[in-house]
Length: 378
Image 1 (cartoon, rainbow, N blue to C red):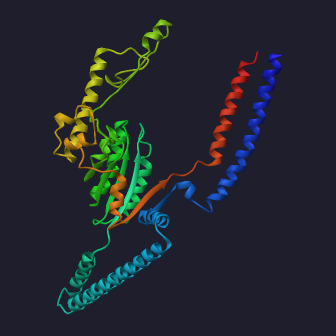
Image 2 (image 1 turned 30 degrees about the vertical axis):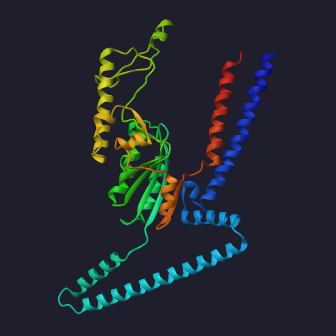
Image 3 (image 1 turned 45 degrees about the vertical axis):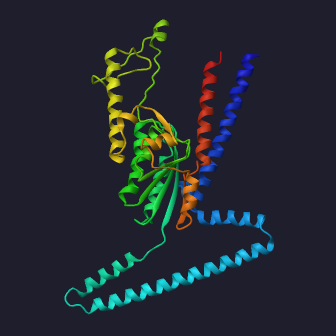
């Protein structure tokens, strides 16, 4: 009876595998055809939301619910009048600046020798001196152990830097309890691109930016935190289980062969020595020193002897230790920015996994199960 059951299960799995394989072929053909019409599912795409309109729509909804029809009508008329007056003022200002630029350009043409070059320079200076409305670009970063969303952050920053000027600002909402050093170091280096471009960088922490999360935040020109946001944890930790004694109990040997005295220090399966532990401790202490130097370079007023102990502090306590610059939520800061700036929220959407990839993985798994069952048959 068992043999019949095994045969049936094997046949069933093989049949399913064949069906999946056929579907995979169809999916691959469809995928190739789709690539000719769109690339956004292959390389990802960027979406931009104009937050000024978002908050205006919320305000209008509340007004309609709380005001009488007559009051709403009166309020809208006042808004339209104010908008027209503002547009008229801006148009007049733009016209005056254009006339001034034309006058400077024509006077520059009358100069001798380097007339043309000076005229060009005057024109550029005039254009640069024109006051443009400030733009604020809002990004988000939610960190896990591997800082896996750094690829999204990278593309969002690249997009911002194609348009941002030194008059603009980038706000990054950071939420992360930390993780592996190299991944968070890479994320911090992405934010450094904004600073190097001469664009103001603000990091807002609503809940937590500790350890690697603070490594990212410390790059900013200013750090904001909610009253009970957890900040700090300037330290390094490593936890490694060891099952060597368990293996020995069952007479299982585990060999580690290395070339280089410290190619491996601590091991999960091998026997750890005091020398290996000492070397590993030296390595994480060196990483801690690098972390402290990084913090000191970006926030020289921080007393590392006080804050580089691995401890974390809530908003007000963090402010007292110069770990942050102000107590404020990201929502408050962004809404205030909408009063005199154009505020854009950018989100990078990574490419979606193709159906063909999913089906191929499923088919491979099914084949592996079928082979395993075949080996188990009596």
